[in-house]
Image (cartoon, rainbow over all chains, first blue to last red; front, side, top):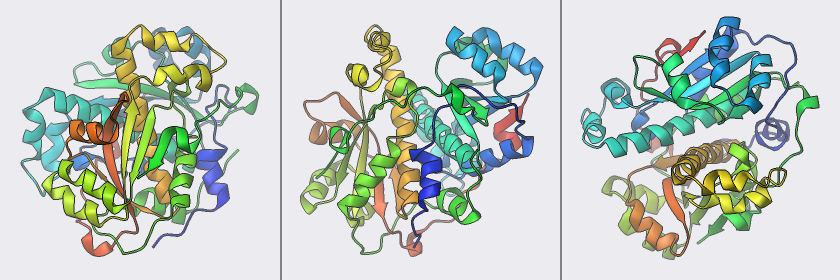
Length: 197
Length: 197
């Protein structure tokens, strides 16, 4: 039986972690990006469907390709960030199920027969994996700056052409400069969002 | 600048954590459920929109109300679990934005004017918060058993009647009995799901 993580870890993952808007000039090595993926991919998805696909935009050339599709409020901070991860999900994730879910070879047919179920499953589980990704980044000492404000269709054409991957959200990664933080926004009380029956 | 969590914490959150199917007969106190929510709600959502709503089904009566809507493969283990959390998202989350995102009072209108954008935002961010929830549960020493196999419309009618909340997924909570574990399913290699440009 697991014990609870110490308060330093809970602060780092949840309570003190913040969405960052400014970045210290410190490189994020590729090995750390690989570790984030290798942590995040172990989180649970429905029938282990693992729909998330990721492009880490790190080079100057990559940033130039991404820039035109960013909303004006997200452009400068993304160009300044050491890395911007494009989190997408594969709409035809189910083609991989014979590999990912080998103990039930009929799983693929659950999704092949319903486009609506496939779309919902891709979005739900792609987003779950996106959250695992952000908490994995925080767990290895990075800060995150997730964003929804961008031209999804443009990003898909530029970075996922010839595939069935659709962009979900973007996440800047690096070591945040606290000078760029906004004031913490309020949260619901327990009773406003949950109940026990 | 944060340091990395130790390997015990990474194992507990990601690498050794498993989806559980059998549960030890050990109660989960309400205070722990409240703590999970108070951790998970601090994770980032788009414009702090926080669409997730949760019903913790813990009593015998609550379990009886939930049971008819579970798929046959999910019923027995859910009845045995100390708690089953219903994770839903509020389709009219944007009505709360003046409270949750007070520094931009126009945010509400972004979603009022597009049902499609509201639906996508609710699903994406509701699922992000669902993942924060599961990792928060693991962080305080609990095990999770997430499930998609249930009658969503039936659960919505029984537990979210009179609201605009839609169920997203279910998650059993407790202290897992390793005897009920399945074999670990394979994961993609880094190169199969990510690239650096």
